[in-house]
Image 1: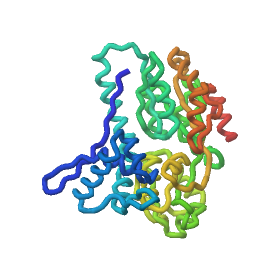
Image 2: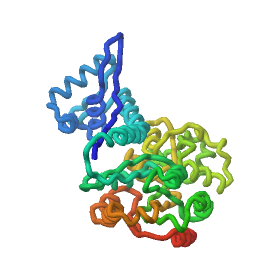
Image 3: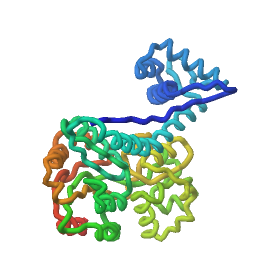
Image 4: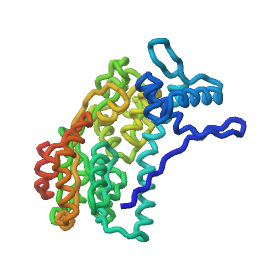
Length: 360
């Protein structure tokens, strides 16, 4: 199947002289992670001398050094270099899913004019870490194409009801909040029409700076400490879940400093904290670990896919379930902090599903 990638381009301009910074940002990020210029050169596929010249050129362009060398202790970024790297991380985390959606829309528009025999499965699901891993495996499977769009819990179920997708991703918290989350989607689940496929579980909680300097261990601590918070967008399932947790614990959202500051993915809020622009956020453990943050677990979510009964019986969907149950996907999930492949690929009727989640 045709694959399209759309990537943001950083272009700085001083006195009418534009400079494109994609390679430079990658080099700086590798220096930040490893502290070695040689590693950055290898990662970029460039010579050591070329990378050093590149850093000097950019330092001269900005009039500010980007790195500092320490005899016998490697290379570190200056405060300015750090700021550039984290700005790049936030940009990618924020725009990545939106650009993927745009690329998929374009591929779908072009597809009718091309000759190919792939069975395209339309997937609407919230952005996370396990769904892209499944997509990577499906992209390597001959005869199956994936049209993946990132949407919220409720919107994915509406898409399924309107026949705008084949698979709808839904995630539900375990514990006291489960009933109201189930109630929100119950009216869209026709027991005669749909089937439910278990996918993964994931841990959600608070992402804080390394060492947890503000000693935050609960939602109440966020309000009481005056910590700077960064929230998810109002349409996301994670934002809805966070609001439910606040209500459950009797916390007014207005008491949380920065509750109206929003980002659009788990990775984006994690990058916001890691860059020093906030002290705490709420999201999945995998995002916290990706950006070197500490994580305070608050709850577990179960992630499911829902599809029409007739689609479940197709050869393409049976192959998808086979991949979900396979060793390679389970290994991919086990590599994600806070994720687990639990009953992955197991199929339930809607009634069986509702009975089982009621006990969750």
